[in-house]
Length: 376
Image (cartoon, rainbow, N blue to C red; front, side, top):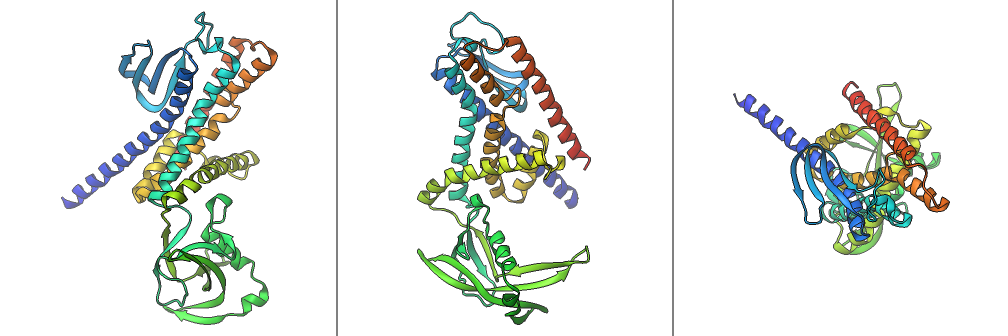
């Protein structure tokens, strides 16, 4: 009976995290559409409807301006419908009757709001949980080290610890070991701890912040190798401490939130390039259901993970929507720019067909990758 209750509680908790993941994804999409809506209202565009979700309307309210606000059944999207966006309209406030520069601002509004939200979420992440800069939470007494509890590790071998530049603490530690010469690797002392014999090197330089002051210290690095499943050797590195992410002060978080959001955006661009070049495959991408599953899984492990996903997904949506792919904002901006240069639009019907085909291809791709993930 107790096992049944525990299983039921576990299932309900999992469902709760899935609902939370859906809410997160819906929030990001709503922020995007709110960008279009806000700039459209500011520039005097006629807006027919602002919808959260797709499908059958669960709630509808018509505002005094004539705009319809709705909440719909399928919580995997949303839209801001402008009058005359996809067809001719005689109303001077209709989308296609507005000047090209105004339309470009409105089309860019969603991307802009997504990136601003990525900055805000990055600020919250840094001040509430921290991210990439490690703070020493525990020192293992079995390993001799000059590191102390609450030391903030700022640099390793003179390189600042910084996710934005790809220099995480683990990466810098590995780089230090790989850059050692043969002579340096032979200059060690043997230390046995818990029946494991380590090679101990005293050549790791760290800059730590201790009691508000920066100090350069030499740290022991403990190394041992063990056989792996492929018949080779696996090298493990230790410095005898455990860390947690350093929670930034208000001023520090304010200074780093923009670069951190830009770093997340850059990682998205790097991933897209690797996808184009074949460095990553289809198993590494996913649609909304895969995204929801991933957010739910990692949030259940640690709620701090959710706050890592927030700026990353916001930056992801910003980059993805600016791409010149039919049906996305980037492609619409391309058509508007061409119209501005030519002085007249490309045939509206042709543009509409291009966006419609692009939408179907995107939906098919999203459906395919989600189904693919179900069977791998």
